[in-house]
Each structure stands twice: as structure tokens, then as C-alpha cells.
Image 1 (tube, rainbow over the protein chains, first blue to last red):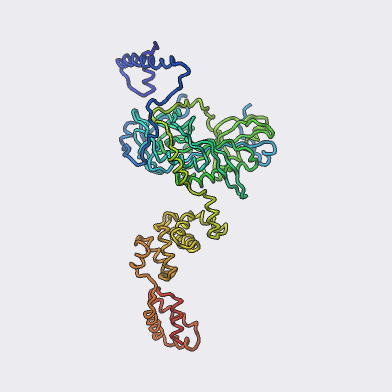
Image 2 (cartoon, rainbow over the protein chains, first blue to last red):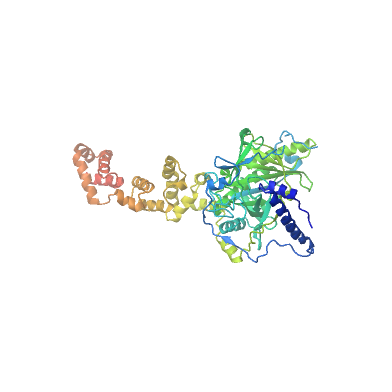
Length: 98
Length: 502
């Protein structure tokens, strides 16, 4: 049993820039706990099983090189915390933690 | 001790008395596909910011990558042109890093199983010899977005207050071509580096898979350089120089780093493994961020893209369609057309080689085809402010004009008017001839009548000609040419004038 606390979830939510209510903190901490437990079962697999990243037996799934509709810029930028001059605005990249 | 100050650079000759340079060149090439690597957004240079973006290249939750088949085909062609093996089964990997130019927080790349590997390119050097550069691998990945750093000095990230992101370039298909260590080049290392990138550019241009414009960033070179003391086996510590934006800069950057490393080593210091930034103006490099190790990227297989298993048929079809090597083709053309080195160079520099070759293929003699493109058409392009390939006339149309001159339908002067008509959008050469009524007047009776008329109009000159002053015929010829609006063959008119005055 892992031990994901409400504080852990609050921290994760802040990193992911998600607003999470008190009630959701309780709900998510239980759910994430269950997910981490499930994933940790991977550790029980013997070492001689080859790793795989693909579970569907497909190869060469290719798309024709033809243009498809994009997002409108105002729609895309409206989802961003900040925008300027038609671009996404992000905080200072270097020395941000100082 | 770590020497971070720039020691006085040594010349390559001085460096090579004590050391052997080792180079590794990584070249990134943007493919000229219509769309991005993993989504159907347009792959276009210079569009308004963030106008070619979608949930996939913005890394929005729930979006899934879909691989561009043409990009895969281009990657295989590049590999084959570089004598590489095509991997029977290859896949993609996530290269994780946290930086706003890649909104997914990872770049989809290839890691352990690049699509093509183990090749070589025989690179022509200035003295006519060839240097074989071994290719480690070429793999597919996606380009990143472009950042604009605001509030700092000269747009650098250092000291910036915030940054603005344009994701038009995010997801544009990239091929990264990596050489094996280039050893043994000695004092020629900077030249070999430049010659390799030049040859690679020419090969890629010949394949038609990329614009290969270093000035626009569609071809970018990172130069790894290290020095090892002569007669030792282990390589020295390397630096990776970025921002090398021209062929000449490749040579200069390698030369500078060789000298700088020697300076550090000979003063008892150690070279720091780091990324260096090349400054075009001064020809020097300065320290960038310390080189991230591979482990930092936490590569892992991309679960959203199934593996690639190119069929043997597909690969062999692509191999059969590979064009001639550009420098071999140039050498063949030079011989076939009997060009001097200078004439060939002029054609290449004017971007006219393909145009002339296509004109010749369309039936024109090489000399006439060349002459049209490098003189009259070059002038027209110059006047219009466009490149030769952008001119609104095709090699086939030029070949038709050449044929019309050869069969006597047009004089050279009329032919230029026909070309003007084609450029003005008046249709095919034959349509312009009809439309503008430009064909040479070859009707002998009409010409003779015009000559008689001109002689009658200027009896004094007619008298001089009859008296044997044949030079005076020029005035009559001029009058006839004027009367026929330049559409008569002047040499034939001259003959007729003399005949009629006999």
C-alpha cells in the first residue's frame, strides 16, 4: 500500500496548474493511491520477461501528407494563462526559482 | 582545474603538431513535407505566429500523434543516399525535458532503433580528392517551437523577463544525421567539416526532401570537437558548438574550437564538456549550458506510435528512384556540354543548372539553352526581383523558343519578345507568336515588294547601291525591317536589296 496524502495531491495539482477543491483532494488521494498500487505490481514481473511498449500488433500506421484543419489562433490562445502578440506568454525561463 | 576563460587560439597547424582533432557532426534537416510529423498542420516557414497549430502539436491532453508517411519515406531516402542500412523494425521514443518550446514536455524522437544507420558519404574536397565520412545514424524527430525572449539584452534568454512562444515550428519533421567520429583529418579537419556539410546539403537538395536553407534554419549543424594528444588512443573531452548557420561558419567554428582547446590543454587546463555558442561576427565561441547527459532525458519508448517495419519492396523502390549524386551529375554535365569550370560554377550559383538541364532534355542544344538562362532570362529575373526558378517560364517553353529560332520562324530579337509574352502570361510560345503576330516574314514576294518600295522611297540611296556602294544597303534594310516591324530576317533582306539593285 502506497501512501498518497492530501498534501501530495495538492502539490501535484499545483504543478499541473489545476484548481482542486478540498473534497476533490480527498477523492483524488484515494484514487491516486489505488493507481500507484496497481502500477507498483509491475515490480512483481520476473526479470526475464522482455520489456514492451506496444501491446497492439500493428506496424506502419501512416498518415497521408495532406493538410487538415488547425485550431484557430484566438481559440488556442484563449486556453493559455497569458498571451501576447499572438504568442503564448510564459514566465522567465532561467533563474525562475531565485 | 577547469579552464573556462578563452585562451589565445592556436592556428590549426600549431594545434596539429601536438594533437589530432576528432570531430562529430550532427546535422538537423527540416523536411519540406506539406504537413508536420505527427499532425496535419501545415509545415510552412514564415507564417503568422501560432496559425499552424492544433491539439497534437500543442500537446493538449488526449491528443494522439499520427505519423506522416511522406516524412518516413524521406527519412528512408536520406538513409539510402547516405549508403545506410534501413532498420527492419524501428520505433519512436520520448525525450523528456522541461522547457516551453515543446509543450508536451517531451520531444518524440528515435533512440535505440533509428530508422537508418551505418552509412557513409564520400565527400569531395577542394583539391579534387575524396574524404569518406562515416554515418552513425539518421533518425526522425520533431522540431520545437520558437521562443522570443523579452526584457533582456539583445533577445538572449539570460536576463529576460518573460518569453513568448510560437508553436508553428513545433512538430515540423526533422531528420538528425549523426556522423561517426571523424579522425585523422589533421589540419584539414575544418575543411572536411565544411565539405561534408556542403556535400550533405547537395545530396539532400538533389533528393528534393528539404529546402536545406542554413540561413532559414531548415538545415542546422552542431559541431563536436575534441583533441587527443598525438599517439594516444582515447578521445579528449569534447565541446558541442551550436548556432553554426552557414557553410563557412562550420569551417570557422571547428577551426576556432581546435585552437581554443589547444590553448586550454597546453596551459595545463582541462576542457569542459559543454555546449558552445558560435558568434558569426567574431568567429569565436562562448560557453552555453553544461551538456546534459543522456540520462537526464529519461528516454522511453513512445507507446502511442506503432513500430515501423518498412517492407523490402518499399525500400528497393525508393532505392531505385534515387537521383545521381549532385557532384557526379555536375561532372557529367560539364563533360557533355563542354563547359569550363567557370561556366559550370556560374550555372550552379545562379541556380540554373537544373533549368538548363531540363531545357536540354526538352530538346534544346546545351549552348542555346545555357545562353537563354544565363543572359536574357537572368536579366528578366533580376529586373523582376525573383530567382531564376521562380520565373514564369518553363524549361519546355524555353526549348520551344529555341526550336522556333532554329527553324527560322523567329529571329533572336523576335524570340525575346516571345519570351516576354510567355513571362507576361500570354500562353505558350506558339500562342504568343500567333497572338502578337511575331513570326518572321518569310514570304519572298512580300519581302521583295517591301524592298522595292523602300528603294523607290529613297532613290538617291538606290542609286549609290547600284553604283557599287553596297554599304548603303543598310539604310534600305533598316527601312524594310521597320516596315515589317522587325519580323523579317535581316540577312535575307540584305541579299534581296543587293539582288534588286543589280
